[in-house]
Image (cartoon, rainbow, N blue to C red; front, side):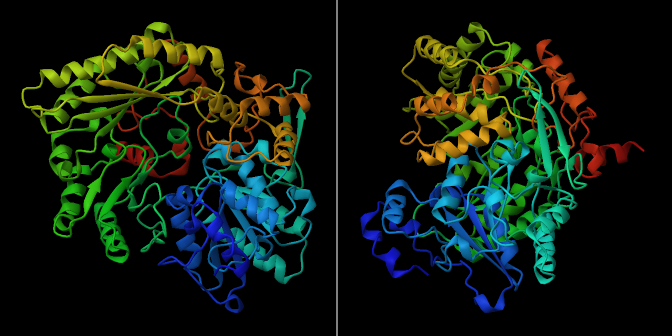
Length: 618
């Protein structure tokens, strides 16, 4: 319910639909009948946040309890923010129109390091003191979770508690504790100390960080009996994990406006640059029956005519053929299309082709990640060039004419030959099209090469590796351009400047909090958007704070260095990550989890592929 003050502003902004609420399936409750209010804050625009599956799951889960009211809050775009500040309108939730100060919990999802400034900006817009230490009462508890919570240190001074791992259970346990502490008139400090004892909860104020003379971390010391290692939470049985029967239907066009079904969590592959592949181990699948029922229910309740099967690698679902058969048994009749957005080159087989032909023709996307076989071995991609060409040939023979290939540049041990290999691989795909007898006649092939810059991320085998310099990355982008000799090939690349700042915050420590606070004072926000990001302004901030950003992004770290995130435990052992990094230097690959257990440590959760495999060996 928007206020009259907000309503007056809507004709002055680019997309009023971002701020009105009232969408179908949004949840409205009577304030007097709930005892806990949760503001789920997405630190980006409405269109981005409304496309995020995690928000959909937790929003519906929290609201399934009569005594909890979860509402949505998005970062207002620049035009709306300017008007809100001018007219003293605080940041508000879409469902009630109430400001952030009215909520017990203010929760953020951390999907991307460059959204950190939006978090601080949203707190300030909501009249919430930005620093955790300045919020002294047991209300407005600021919490955060998501993939970037694996290194929360650059924003540790601003967040009361972080949820480490998967949030469906731990979030509710913390809310239950909050109710008890509130009923007993306990202090915020009492609540945080007790919350730190819940598995999966990290309270940064209960840890003291010391540093060596060379500016590396010396130790992270727990206080008030907080655990020395905070273990992630994990949903062990995906069939029993909560999944919404409804999605809030957006007022305006969003990025992914369709039904989404999570078919499994985790990844068996172990690509050495990929953070998600390690954070979400072990792989845990849903059954065909559960997936089918959830997809059918979602489509019936929302009217969506497309279901996207969400995972890190859809073709790695062990019964993908049977699943598509089951889904198509009703989807074709109901004119619902099934899409597989995360296909591997070696998983695009005849069975999958035959079952998704009805939803094709917009193009296929694959991620070889590197242009040469040596480089693919370094990163443990385990995809052969012949497999890529065979896959493309199958696609062309079945009517596809557009292929998009994703690559990464700046990877450890990369040479110019590896970089040129990206353009050469694109040319080989073009040649493959014209060698296919059954290709679509009278149509030209279109191959798009897209490169992003390698960002070393925590809890990966490459967490110790330096990021390539911006000069080197730009030279590699130029080399790819110069190596393309066909008009059938388009080349896109991600800005290396934003990747640099991403690396700084991905591997940063608590000393970056002062930079973040200064960025807030200077009005920085939406750093992931080209319209708002200016690297030179960030470099000026670092200089003013006497902090060298290259210390975080471009420095190779030794295996015995204490890393800023080492007191968090995602179940992957440091010894395993070190051995994987060393194997990369030798161009040696590691078999995937279904072929052989590599003893990464994830078996400790007693769930998923590695545990099942060991059980079968007994």
